[in-house]
Amino acid sequence: MDLNQAVGENYANPKTCFFHVLFKAAALAFYILSTLFFDSFVIIFVVTVILAALDFWVVKNVSGRILVGLRWWNEIDEKGESLWKFESLDQQSLSRMNKKDSWLFWWTLYISAVAWIILGIFSVIRFEPDYLLITGVCLSLSIANIVGFTKCRKDAKKQIQTFASQTIATRLSSTIQSAFSVV
Figure (spheres, rainbow, N blue to C red):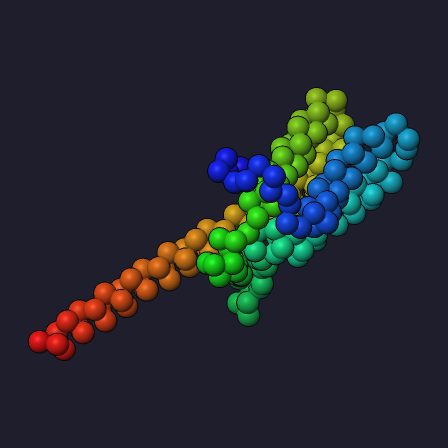
């Protein structure tokens, strides 16, 4: 988090932030607390995976766009090859993104993946391979979003650098041309 930002600055999108955290917390809380209330592995599996899938969808399609200005998706071309597609806001819009929103987005993305890893380790220690399946599915969804948004952020930075270098080159060449046209 940027220490130079105003102390009183609030989240620009509190509802989006709430739902960004809600589904992550709901999936983790249900998985952790479900053994207290249910004996059925099937119910625990289905509900936890549905909550994790809702989290995946909300992060990928809603909070990623609103909180950090990024969007990604994957397509399969005619040859059967996987193609990653990225979208980001322009440089000015990205620079105006709320720092708290961005901070919350990235930290919760990584913390939830770490939590699923820890829960997976506990499943191995307790010799419960079926619960390892749940943590594996949820971790896969979390990692898919991490990879997608990290690639998207790198692509956005590359686009900004390309735009900046093209702008500098254009201005430099126009300055040189105007200097020689005067002579």
